[in-house]
Length: 50
Image (cartoon, rainbow, N blue to C red; front, top):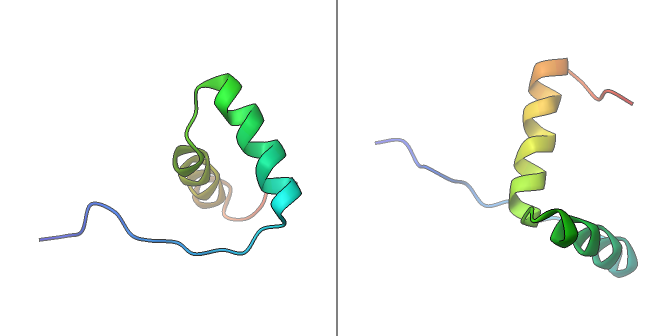
């Protein structure tokens, strides 16, 4: 049986984390969903789009 999720550990500057999570909260998007969306875009673009 394949795992439904995997853990990701990353070090992020506290100020960047706070600001990003504040914006995501306003949008109603949990940080884990945003990270998942970012990873999916990497797959679709076969790289970074910026």
